[in-house]
Length: 189
Image (cartoon, rainbow, N blue to C red; front, side):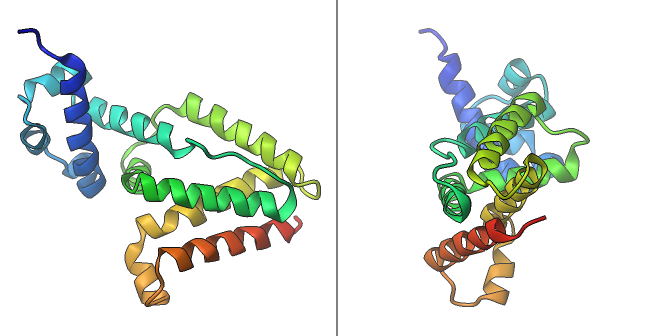
């Protein structure tokens, strides 16, 4: 019987995603990841080199999903509102990603897959620049950072939402994120 390398990698990535989102790179334990995956921990070293390599692989895989189906459509406030809603929905489908991004920023000196991510962001900025005629490219870039922050905040800071806006559900928060993004599109400078 041959070893199913892809299935083993997938199991490790799934278990590691949960552990890294929960505890970060420093807090996650290789023993726990391998036990949760049902895979010998030596496979982690064989496939990913070390725990940091596994973290990088998890983050790269998760980041790829953030922009699945997310695009800039329309123009003006509608474009920014649509983008915010799509990003909010994406984080609902991939709830570990915002926490992984937070851990990445806290624990790593450089972002994982920086070149590819920068290229995706540049494409998004170009689309926003075209959709927002009253803004230049630099303003579009800052708006993208703000919209991403709005869309990811609830998943990174769930207690803040419950303290500041008690009783608010995902539908209320999504509507608020879209309204705030639309308002940002009307601010010049």
